Image (cartoon, rainbow, N blue to C red; front, top):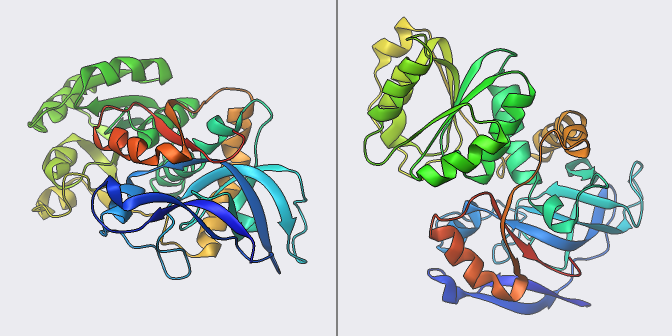
Length: 335
């Protein structure tokens, strides 16, 4: 078997369990599968959790090679692939294994990279922009002119959501624990912002002030349990709470009376564990709605820092420091 280099989780726990090793290259693609030579791959919180043994890859995905998003060029295609061909620049999502020199994925989970993006910029796009677009528009049905509150506004998903919401004609509000991140996020379309430390009521008060008591229509929450009560108080009539992350925990008391009186909707979403068909639909909508915005630079990826694959431990430490603004990207080959 041919070999390739990959980031490998050799033991669960700290960054010392990450190594770059020679592993078997994926088999040649068949049917609708595509072999991509990966040039760069994004780093996500899911990779941190997988390294710690708290977020195993779904069945069928590599358990020891992390990576949910990538950018590269098509090396080979299966016999049922129709729309793509060898040599094209593509980016996409996968349930794992993207932090390697090669990855095999279904054709339906790939999109063509606009010519104005380099490898690193392209690798910073798929997971966060597909997640944000799917959560805001497919799930929460954000409409033109509505108001949206984005937590963790300086994160990759947060910055993608702010840009997409603004591009749709929505008004965007945001929170972060770091005032400096909020100031930088204003350059991506954030209208109003408030720094939140250990008192989530701060943003509920701010939302009432910003909206003259009307509340927001949609909240994109990457934080979780500690924000639930303040989220509900921040939503207006028929508001929608979209749960995307639980960095501060997954359990909290729920005021059912408030939910009923305001006719609120509470929804949760994950991208990694979805079926190929669901990922294909999300990718198709991303390709038709978001890629044209990237091509004309109406929205843009934000790279915090670029690391070589051999610096993967430092990349994990950077993400865990919570000092990053935007995406952390690994150069895999030739990026």
